[in-house]
Length: 193
Image (tube, rainbow, N blue to C red; front, side, top):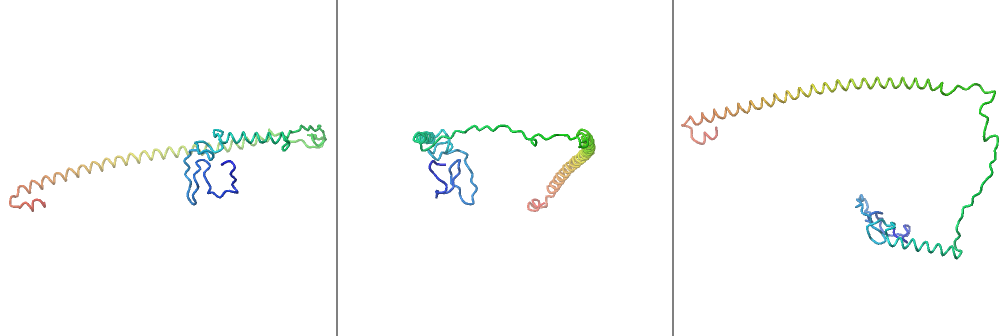
């Protein structure tokens, strides 16, 4: 993307056209998405008109072309308008109906059959959709029932856990009072209990 740089003559590594970072082999390039000019290293695209070098190059090129045209090295191309006269042949506009042709059925008669077939298909699809809707409603009700059963079981389990904690606390109080009531046990044995 640098002016005067030719790809087939280049020996440098391939670079990202946006950020100009070199591509590494077997590594996915993560572009920073910040444009960098190959001409002046400013923050714009390499061939953007914001670049002073690009603007100067275009002016120089335009001047060189105008100079080549004035000296006769180049010639301007002017398209020429060549109008061909209209020629009508018999094949251009063939006769639509010959007297020997049989009567062709009108397209709207065929369409009635197609419309009724389409209507039947749509009615089948509608019936299937109604069946699916009913199945979804039944599944939704079953899901609500299962969810309420799970919630009631969860409440029951929670209540039983609280009862077990109360029973354990009661046992601890009873054991503590029993160990304190027995003066003949030494402190080591009391701590073990």
